[in-house]
Amino acid sequence: MRPAWSVIWFTTLLGCAQGLVVALVLAGVVPGGASVHALRDGLLLAFALGTVALGCSFAHLGQPRRAWRAAAMWRTSWLSREVLAVPAFLALTLASALLLDRNGAWPGWLRALTLLAALLLWLCTGKVYAAIAFIREWATPLTPLNFALMGLASGHLLGAAWLAWQQAPAAAWLQRLALLWSLLAWMSRAGALARLRRLRRAGSTQGAIGAGSRPVRQVSRGFTAGSSNLEEFGLHAGALLLRRLRSLYMLAGFALPTLVLGAIAWSRPQWPWLLPLLIVQFAALLGERWDFFAQVDHPQNHYYTAAQ
Image (cartoon, rainbow, N blue to C red; front, side, top):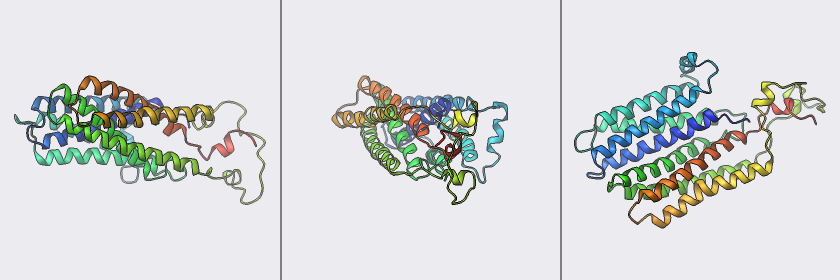
């Protein structure tokens, strides 16, 4: 499929914001782990990232003024649930920042709700794609798992860099948690790619036109000119380009952070080292998310693309 950059930025930025909130919630549990200013400003940073991500999502709407209708089907649609979960997560993050006391603690119920909102938002975002059964590349529990693990990896790395800049003691174990999440995200994404290599193309030309078992030979792609079906559901990129992209983001987004964090995990966190690593990882995760959408071979392509 043709990747939409608005959705790529939305999911990657929002996942990082969620991971940062989880990291700050954990840092706030430890007495003296971080100052109230470090926690409050970190939560405001997460809120800002989430707000920018929400703004990116509006670029994907044909009629932004009708965006409220996206929440109308929340009983049956994971997309509608995501539309409701995003502002709830942002509101709880902002409330957490405003309700911190002088010791850097906030009400336990609010901390629990904020953590739960981040986890539920990952579930909703992942299930938007995993629930589409006819797109086999997405229809797997690995989809929401990968969304969560990548967000936790980038968010904890950002949290470690932020608290290291603030000289907070909690930065040390956030750095180690970033190592753990990066390793798990690496394993999970590698598993998803291995599954992708074993997938067989869904559907057939016969099934696309309802011809049953009778042999059908396609002689036309269905259109004589350009159309949405050809532009949005087909990607004109070579297999070599996709293989190189996957090698690059697996190296820069997972292998490199894991190796670097493993080497410095038990040393004092230094934000000048963590910040460039975060930038490299985030750029690689944008490439990973582009490939997540580009890898899809939509069943409609049996009829609307190349003739056989």
